Image (cartoon, rainbow, N blue to C red; front, side, top):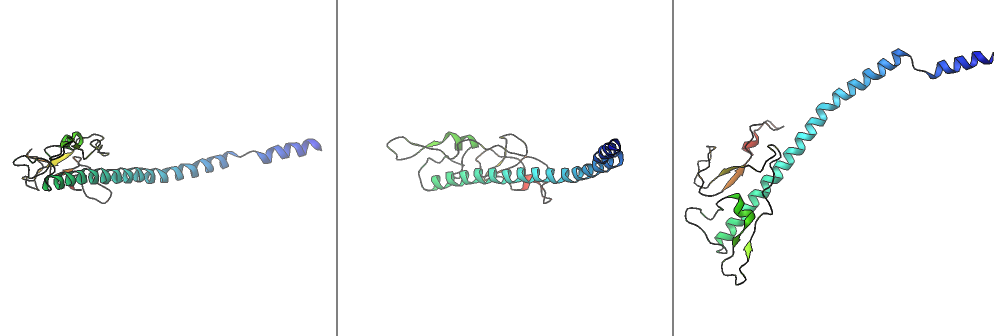
Length: 160
């Protein structure tokens, strides 16, 4: 009689094939539902980083323009007081009227575009037509992402 109870006890602890298949099927459904959620979360995080990088670049351009308007740095002709390129914001410019020869720097480094994974940004000069995608090369008035991808809100990253 002890053997019968032992055999019955072992049988009740094991899973049947149907229980295993149902469990795996439920796990597969849950995994299938979570993949789109994870991919949207990753894309949302990239968009947040893109906005942060654009804000950082645009603030540096604005600080450069404010310094040129205040007469703290030398303004080249046809630049309207905007930087000639993004590297100038990193390398800095010599301050006017400073006996110590200080260099004004506006960025530590050119931020990475998280959509394209590069430091290549689309540039617009003050003299450019806002509707065109070509840069005249006179100065850097604005920056934009060069990707043609569509954001979660349906807009293009290049229009941000």
